[in-house]
Amino acid sequence: MKAIILLGAPGAGKGTIAEGLKAVSALIHVSTGDMLREAVKKGSPLGVQADGYMKRGELVPDDLIIRLVETRLAGGGREAAYLFDGFPRTMEQARLLDDCLSRLGGQVDKVFLLDAPRDLLIARLAGRRLCRKCGTNYHVVNIPPRREGICDACGGELYQRPDDGEATVLNRLEVYVRQTEALISYYEKKGVLLRVDSSRPRQQVVAEVLRMAGALAGA
Ligand code: AP5
Image (cartoon, rainbow, N blue to C red; front, side):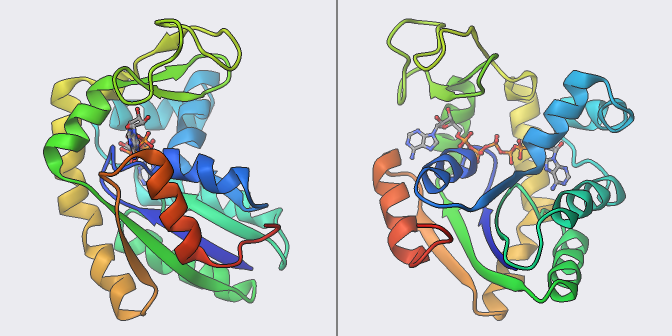
């Protein structure tokens, strides 16, 4: 079992780069943010528990996240190759991922740290729009749809994520510094961290990550 991790602050471009990598590989995309939003939408017990944390821009408790990811990995098998986006986010999650992968004969292969200045992160989150139907990601300035408010891919309505309001974004950025940044040195010490300047245009960032990733599953 293989694992690639996309690490970075809210708005660094984890979801955007994941889409680029998925398009050219057979990596299995595991976005804990997407899984949680789906649970909230369905009103499942996990969604009900996670909703308040997400609205405030706080992290959802580790035990809930770990259960969610373990369930997802259980179906994969030893040959699976995963692309984690937004996970792990705490030291406890990182250690648990290591344990889980080693039980399945795997390890973390590469961690891409997507790095962009804070003012750019804020501008990206303020301008982000998503399609209600297919989830395609846009930005009102950087990656605008052809018709305002309408998805190019499926014609669905575009909306703003409830946690992309200004106060919540500022809290999410603080939470990243407080609870997630420690993972940078954790993976640096393991020799698997690769830094990527994600302030550049999307195609350039995707191309650089692909070059650094080397041979990807199914590519
Ligand atoms: P999550 O969904 O993971 O959100 P996040 O980490 O805050 O990251 P974002 O999705 O906001 O940003 P991104 O880096 O993916 O940027 P994107 O590519 O969209 O988590 C949400 C919440 O769920 C958390 O706050 C927490 O409550 C909970 N949660 C999730 N995982 C958890 C975990 N493991 N533990 C505990 N709680 C958890 O890009 C942003 C915008 O910029 C887009 O509009 C995009 O089009 C644009 N853009 C991106 N890259 C470029 C580029 N290179 N050029 C131009 N525009 C770009």
